[in-house]
Image 1 (cartoon, helix red, strand yellow):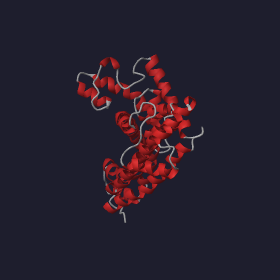
Image 2 (cartoon, helix red, strand yellow):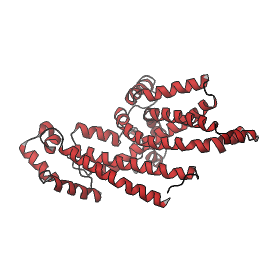
Image 3 (cartoon, helix red, strand yellow):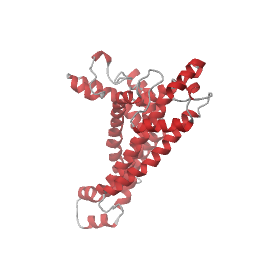
Length: 334
């Protein structure tokens, strides 16, 4: 197992190296005459262009720029914003807890509803129950996140006034920021502020988790039906084992493999989908930061965030692969 983990980590190095080259060239190949002109946009003047070229090292030979960029990455320096001058790492550490919180909420919604729905449909294949679950999953995977988000915000916030529409906390509560996780900060502040934090989390979590919910439901249904037709399941039933024991001990234990894989892959999809969801609900996370950085032509921030998300995605995939061995002891990595 240790050899497999080391090999996977070493295999990720060429991927990250190739991505760093692509991102490095991305900034240099932007239209507008050069990276400084692309960053400054309509505000470009000869003086500002010269200043950006000097401070960012764009006036150096290309190979010198790349090795300098690679050296900064190896030292954990992802650059600074050209808008406010703040370090990308510092701003990321402030905003990323909000994205994690939203991702966890969406994952809880998707897994908590998707797996039971998939199991329910698998127990009644080709029935009206299976048909209803199929319609729900097709609806969830086909409707765009921003359409669902704006629709729910209009119905539940504007019309019914049941849930808050924007933000992570009610600013009138004056909750001190300790961890940048709104739910945790609300708990630490005491009183019943956690209710407000959870209320703000409901709509964006549902909007972000709609597509993973549909995918998890369909994969769970297919996996459970496939395992239920295996010989060892029929043998277990013939021995007189109860349905609950057969389902938990024989069916779900083996059906967890594809389900776990798709859940792990959905984490990366949730991080990418957070860009739209955070924009719709004015959520102070990395996704809304990406949109703002693109609008401000702050491409150094965009460049660094793409690399960060690539590292996160590779890490999640590694965790999923390692989890295979614990879920199914028959799997051996050579």
